Amino acid sequence: MKNEAAFRVNSPTGWTKLRNQLLLAQIGRFSDDLRFKATERATYDPVYDLTHTFPNSARSDQRVEAEFRDTYLDYSKGPFDLRLGKQQIVWGEAVGLFFADVVNAKDLREYVLPDFDLIRIPDWAADLEYSRENAHLEFVWIPAPEFNRIGGDGSEFQFPLPLPTPTTPFTRQDPLEPGNRLGNSELGGRASYLMNGWDMGLFYLYTWDKAPVYFRTIDPSGRYNFTPGYKRLHVAGATISKEVEKAVFKGEFVFNKDAHFSILDPADSDGVTERDFLDTLVGADYTFFEKWETNLQFMHRIIFHHSGLLAENEHAVRNSISFWLRTDFFNGRIKPEFLVISSLMEPDFLYRPKLNWKLNDRWHLRFGADLFRGVADGTFGKFKGKSRVYSEAVFEF
Image: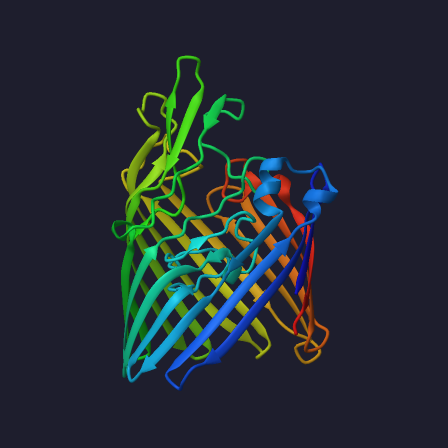
């Protein structure tokens, strides 16, 4: 069981989350080769009943939820492992943001602030893996894809629409997700090989763009009319890592073919253009004095054939950096932690100090802050009025 409370420190101040969560997980086996896991989660957030901070659109979306999380069968035989069911398929290990972690859709109603295993939306999928000596192969089939969950109108972390000004009049329809039929399946694979200490991997995924594409028309009065939809996407990439002394160096490279970007040119017929882009991450993990864990990352995006009218602060080149630090005291009972992610192109920051406190084997506490700073259309600056302090209390039974 978990209680999560968050308080907005920017004006207007107020409680933005008082969520109570019950997470049940069962793990067992039918035989030595066949195992199972079932996970259910239910949440209730009384902030929508006790305050008038959010409109009904946000209340109906986030007040009460019940869902299956990771629920699957595992079958192992020799070099083969097969997982069938609702699952998270993790291909990337970036800290703070998602790069090669491209398979699962994301729950972004609290942006990238929750733990990643709660941000990822498990897919009903078949995941077949083959391991032999230094080689590893993986094939993924997702017959019923999931799509990103984003905050509704008036929610705390609502994403802005691609409008020329904040006061531009608009209408918006709800995006229509593709139906669950065989032709809408997602397919992908990954191959990795360990050679001379280098763990090198390649992957490809024929998928859907998990975020809606905001097609639009402009009527004679100047009103923007959005009809969001979902488009197919080809994603290819590579990962690499190597341990040198006490440091682990790693890289993630992700190429998106014909991705869709909103464009602000009013003469454009549908407000959307296709561009290829490449995301690159290089980083290193290192532990100082066997106690201070650190991670440093450099992140780079290049959009090919860039147009200066792309919306959402999409520069032709974007460079960012992140730094993460964690240590512990009192035999691991208290673990302070700090993460900062910053653009190198303009003022745009996210600061995340937190303190994890293990009272005993059943009770865990966390206290922290999520602080957004920067330009109004920046990756983090667009939420600069949403900085918060928070607490979490977890009871395990």
